[in-house]
Length: 136
Image (tube, rainbow, N blue to C red; front, side, top):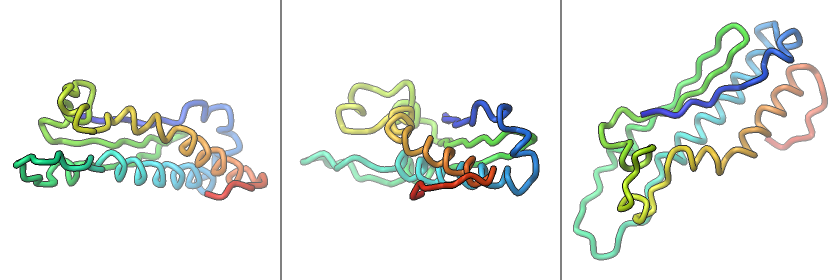
């Protein structure tokens, strides 16, 4: 199970971002975003009062982030290789897991959308030499 965050529209500023140094600004933004999403996706909800279930932390430890940079493309991926992840935090989340407070990966991305967009706005401005008044 995985979630990908892809920067769309890079082609529009590709000429300005063609050199490696400038593309590294976008890669840095993606690294920050993937790191933040990895933490948030792996966050456990509060324990259910009276539950005898012993948490192992395996799901949280299985959340991994990766960033790939190619020609004109910066892609981030947050994923879990654990077999039951789709039923707890993924698209097949059960009603029980939702009721217990587990967030779907897509919901986490949605809740962070404005912050993610700001990371890339600021990175593009830095890359093309524009002013960056954002506090990132």
